[in-house]
Length: 91
Image (cartoon, rainbow, N blue to C red):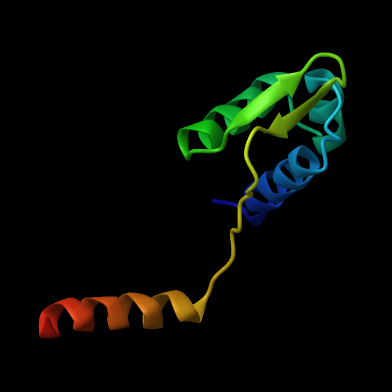
């Protein structure tokens, strides 16, 4: 999967968090993707649990709950999952 896919996901996430997406056509144009591709991103984000809503008055997507995506590599996740596994093996 190309890096730009994750970059777009992070950009969409950021714009949703600040309630600055604009209308779907504007957001798609800003990201240089088709509206159909934008809707696929939004669908995927919703399937991953993102509570995305659209405010017709403000003409922007927003999250109905606080949160956001964090798509980065973290060494700490391995250490935490290993400690979690060890805890249950010992218990």
